[in-house]
Length: 410
Ligand code: EZ4
Ligand code: CO
Image (cartoon, rainbow, N blue to C red; front, side, top):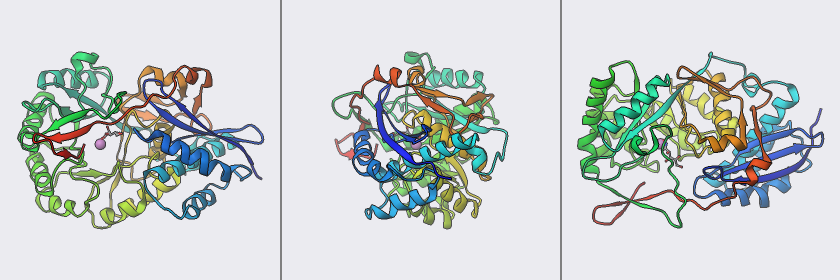
């Protein structure tokens, strides 16, 4: 039984934001889709796939998922890194999609079947101040979400991280991190003000919304180890579901210090991309949630391996689900969420409606939970005619500077 790959196309479209999609087609016309979107560096992955990976795929058997993963990883010689691991992820997702379509089964069935009835998701709420944030939280609660990430502009700082004013968007959509500007937008940052304000925000949120809603927060790599330890300790009374990326990902030792001072659960990993990045954090029990994405961590095959390692240490999954993971990557995450035993939570930032004109999905949302649906494969279709209306537009993530002008972690 073989399914020979006939073509490998790299599709780039920008329905509200840029997405890179790999489409593999077999000799019999069976199609598989993979997400290859690396926010702000999209064309690097597109070239990696088009120029270096596609020629290796033509004529190969689409059924050999593990073998293809190992071939692309080991034969490149230059290993790991976001560009390589995103490219491999796209191939891996597309092959799982093909296997599902060939067998008539949704991918979660191929992964061992459902371990739960749905995946708990968290939404974003943000605001220019607490009143604005309150409107945003109430909108999410009215939609049924049971878990919400809170971000607010810090008074006196002018900007924060992850803020889209509910006043300007009607509170409907999450903020969009990449800006369609010629160069990266620059934002100011002041850790001292931030550290003073975050406990006040969470104290207000618990008083306003009670103990039951799960609350999350993202520090976006901006703190020193001691600052992160202080924040994690100061937030303990407010019972966070997790504190995300409290220190830069390149410095995993920082988490030892944070752990010595606090029991606030920690999530790390959206900029990591391999099991070798996660292994020390997992084995030393320095994190509570693996915060990775299928799209940037080598695909379903590789991320499952990370989750299985995490399971040995009672660490759970917390897949990244921002707007810059395409609906294909989001669907792949949902299939994995449903299948693995140590699922924790899934981020769902929700794409703009334009994105769904290009990507037709079969997932469902109800009462704070999502299900990937029972269509064969990943359950996502790509509309070429719609995509042609949205050509690629350069977009960059912002940069952050301290008040004296020093470039800081964004
Ligand atoms: O900044 O995905 O938790 N979510 C995040 C995201 C990231 C973007 C980067 O492309 O931190 O908003
Ligand atoms: Co984050």
